[in-house]
Image 1 (tube, rainbow, N blue to C red):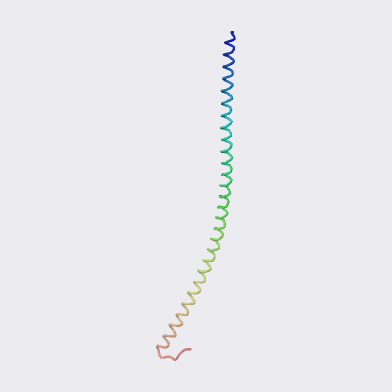
Image 2 (image 1 turned 135 degrees about the horizontal axis):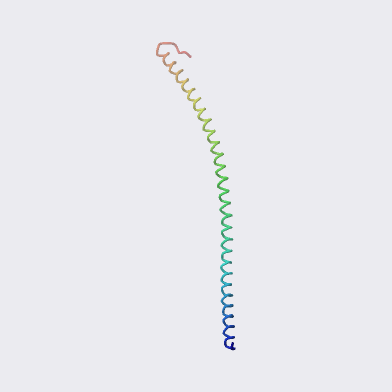
Amino acid sequence: MTIEDLERGMKLLFDQQVHFSDQMMKSEQRQDRTDQQIAELTADQRVTMKAITAVVAMVGELTDAQKHTDAGIRELTESQKNTDAIVAALGRRIDAFIAALGNGHKNPL
């Protein structure tokens, strides 16, 4: 083995080391970008989870409010039935009063 062969071998080893070092640096840079993207996605996921939690809470509140509204509508429906019955009874009394006046009776009041 000559000095030239030894120098070529050393240059080859040196070039391989430089290439390996360059590839390692690029790999570290890609890893840094990947780590940054993961951190951003994790932050986005936290924001999304907070938003979902808020929406779920609002849906619960709306459900409770709807139950309250439904109960109020039921009460109003019952009250309307009572009012209708009272108005119908009053109408019958007015009709009877008018009929009595039309038959020549004295004012029943």
